[in-house]
Structures are given as C-alpha cells and as structure tokens.
Length: 112
Image (cartoon, rainbow, N blue to C red; front, top):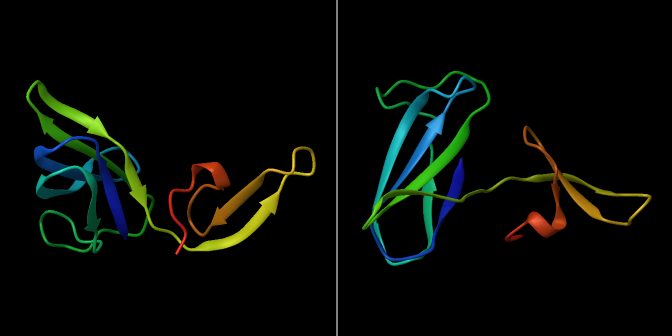
C-alpha cells in the first residue's frame, strides 16, 4: 500500500507504524531524514519479522523527531476510487473506496 507522511518541518527522522485491528504494531518503517513536504512510503504487507501479514484492516500512524521529542504527523494513503456519491440534500460529493471509508471531496489531497 502506497502512502505519504506530511512532514511540516525539516526533521532528523520520520517513522511510519502499521497497526493491526487491535492496535498492535506489525511493521515499523524508518523513512530517515526529511527536509519537509511529503515523505513517500510503500508497505508491501510484510511484518517486522519478515512474514506476510494476514488479511485484515490496518491503520498507519507516523511521527517525526523534533527538538522537543517525537511529534505525530498526518498520513496520506493512496486508494482507488470505486464510485462517487452526491448528497441529495447538499450536493456535496463523496468518494467511495474499496476496503476504506468514504471521504468528502474536500478531504482528498491528490487525484491521479
């Protein structure tokens, strides 16, 4: 699964944690130093011990190293749009993804 971390400032380290449905870390990826902007990553479904993670729901959390300690930062995930919905009341558009929650169009950062 491809994604990116929003790095607001230059940092000595960016870390992404992949967590299973009960919140246990199954993979920790160190992305190294970053000057700010988007730090891209790709999780191949493999756990820290080198085995394939079982099918299920996973979440991604990231942090950067700052002078005052670790700081949580946002994670963006690439996903294929399955369909688009429009609210009959407001006309607001939502994008519907396979195996993910729907998002309002205002929550989408990039379409490619």
